[in-house]
Image 1: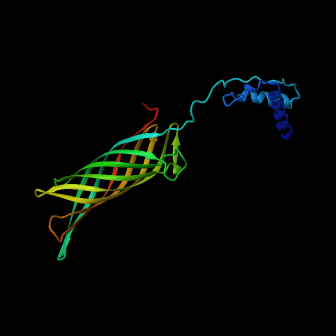
Image 2: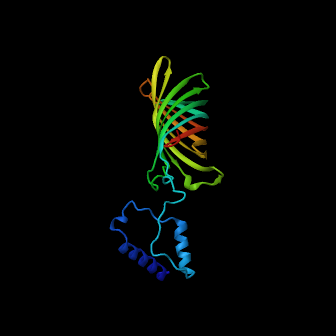
Image 3: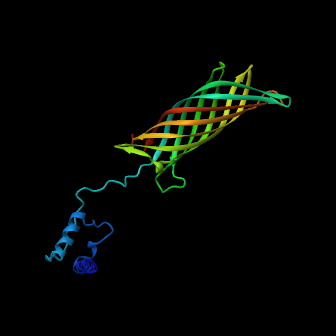
Length: 243
């Protein structure tokens, strides 16, 4: 192998001495893979090689590096859960149970945080939730979230699709009208689930846990609601070159 490399280097040096000094530059085309194999095979079989090599463009040039950058992610989902609300003061507490159904709209952006460049497995996003309570009340919520797409733990894949787990956390504010009063609540949420990805589409199923600390209009009263539920939906990843 050493002799082969030494021979090829010698051929190139001799060609450089006899060629025009301006014939080699940064724009000089490299030899394609087929011609390179022919030269090596000719040498190993003891055939005579020409002193000057003819360079040509690759027959099938590679376009780009196959790297895709995310522009935006759009999503919509539905969820259903059981809610436990506890209202308390210094004299005691009272709990109430009901169900909560939600419609969620999401806008996000994928990027690379601690993984290799261009993998873009992390996502920051904003959500708007409209929630329907079985007690005939509704409330809305705005949240800022972070999600980790754990594609490195892909557990099933096929032709053009694969499945992997995800984890997400959210912080935000909720708003509700009660007894003609507008009440705000600090909202925290966590979700974990599975994503089925095919092309630019993500279909997901999550287990969600949401807690709201309502700012009760009466001083001295604490009002906290916790919802455990399931959510499912669809996201679309808009990538450069997808439009």
